[in-house]
Amino acid sequence: MALTNPDILEMPVSPTTGAMPWYQHIVDWVEAETAGLSTEQLDFHDGSPDKEWMWWSCRTQISHIAWDALVFTKRRAGHLLWPDGDFPEPINWVDHQMGPDNRWDRVLDTDLFWETPDLLTKLRLGIGWLTELVEEETIELLRSEVRTVKGTDFWKYVITTLPRGACLAKEDSQSITYDLEGSLWMVFYEMLSHVRSIQRLKLHQGLELAIELPRVGYLRLPHYWGETNENGPGMRRL
Image (tube, rainbow, N blue to C red; front, side, top):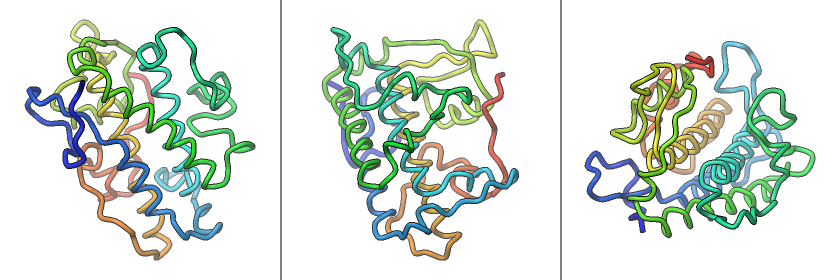
């Protein structure tokens, strides 16, 4: 099995340990930062074109993190978790595919999952799948699961935080090659960056933060920590 350790919060430079994220941190951090928020505080956002980090409210950030935990895990590692094809159906998978043409793009169905407890229930489920995956599969298997996909400006930017596991494809500089080890660290960093967005929304409202997040992964990049309010690289294809 892959090594999981709550004290290891960043992909180790050396590949010898095979350490993987402690995903439960995400649930704990989300719960801590959103506890006691009023409806107005949860739903505060700003859709201005030059304020991309404020487009999604704290509630929507939770919904997206839960979507990530569920949809990413099923899409990227469903064949490992459910080798017989008996995929669970906690959400309608077709409705939740990525893309602006889908009804629920990167968030859970707001008609069904709106209240914070419901969103946290879905988040815990997805985090449970991720935890099961890294605790039951070997690091050698995770590194053998390699895919190449069309890259975006965003992915080209964020993979710079990984010491290995994701890179521009050698045969096509417009594509990214990544293994499942790298991908699993990337989704941890992705979810972490949205916890940070919740913190930034709270700070903008004059609210105190509940925890001190580790500045690891994507949070080492100025756009995702909040050293700049400029929009970060987008999803334009390379």
